[in-house]
Length: 277
Image (cartoon, one colour):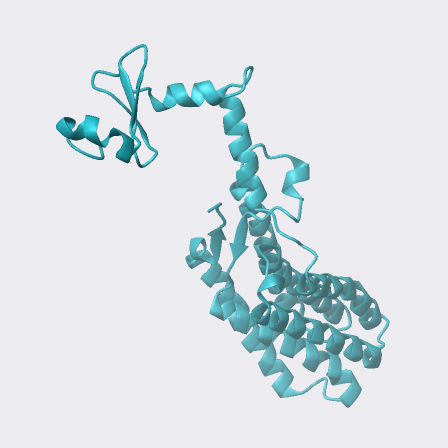
């Protein structure tokens, strides 16, 4: 039967329905009034694979199609690394050796000012990333805590050299930070689709995972920075032997150990693997 009428009315409605029957090698092919072509009875339907094979240019294989699909998938995971928060995080990393030098030279007044500047960059990059969507990036989720860890490690080593922070506490913090940085590099390797080349591994434009620090880890970073600020100000305001400063050492040791355990316990939940949509 036709889409426009019954077989008996076909001859009478041929002009009105604009239906055209065309003879083909295997039977009848009807062009209905809605513009859709259909085969008559007994006509074999071409498989989808044969259609795809016919449309594929000569000399190309299914492997070429897979390679193109991979390139499209990789392109969807690329992002702009040159955002304002990422630049601020890199500036904070650059301030770390400057602070270390000032502390070793016992220039605590200028060191305290530079540390305040580093703290402002930390506050700004988080504020900008939260309030401007186009400034948020997967790279920033790793670069921001990495900058904090580099800055804190350099500060604690320098302050220990200046006899302002005990060696055991600094050792605990540095070992924890080294373990976390190593874990970040491992996650990068595991989430990078093959081929895993050095150029793709260190390409900041290619995002593969986003890190989500635990709540206790954020609190630990805050406590560590408070201890650094208090230790830097101690020789300036003459309270180096304060019992409150020593109590802060104990609190920092507790939060550092708790934070390390939280990453061990909730390890997989702190990493979100990015996939193409």
